[in-house]
Amino acid sequence: MAIERVKTRIMEVGHNIEKDVIIRIYHKGIKNLFEIYSKIADKMSFFDNSEGNPTLIVKLNFKKEIESVDILK
Image (tube, rainbow, N blue to C red; front, side, top):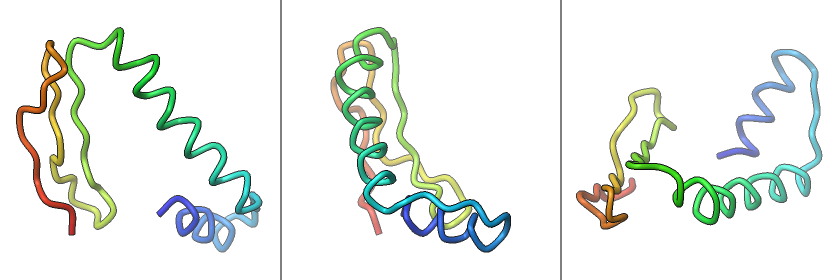
């Protein structure tokens, strides 16, 4: 999805980011989310907004246990 978002931005404003950079930044962001931010957050909620309507996928509570999961489409 990240690569497609960049393609859309390129068409709109002409800004290009190489595919390997997008992948590297994406993986680093996911790593930071779980290794840094999940340790300092009280709750975390993950949404799929790829189709314009945010859908809750996973909600983590204080104990970092999964409260609910929705199947990705």
